[in-house]
Length: 131
Image (cartoon, helix red, strand yellow):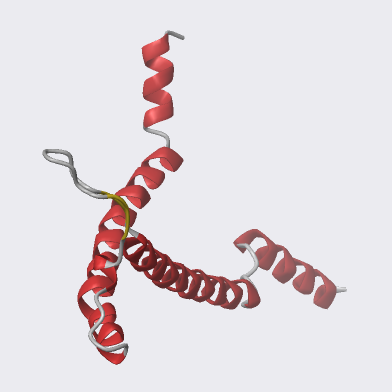
């Protein structure tokens, strides 16, 4: 089997396609969460803390000199990223918990026996009754 044939077999495998879809949806979900944090959660939190905008928090390591920009340590953006992460982690936790609850309900319900077993049980009962 050639390299390209092996690659084609690998690339169209179900798990790889599922993973690619998950990554694409995850990236889109990340943008939504970033907007939710930056535009919905952080303004009220900043207002409660006296009108503070976290994204502007930075510590200047070196002042700007001529055409060179200032060197800053943007810890406000880090705080916002931490809030983003916490929200994403909570959302994933709730999603996984819901999926596990759904799976537990499915596993709890006993599966119906296959047709062959039902027919064999009927034949057995008929033979027992005929004795």
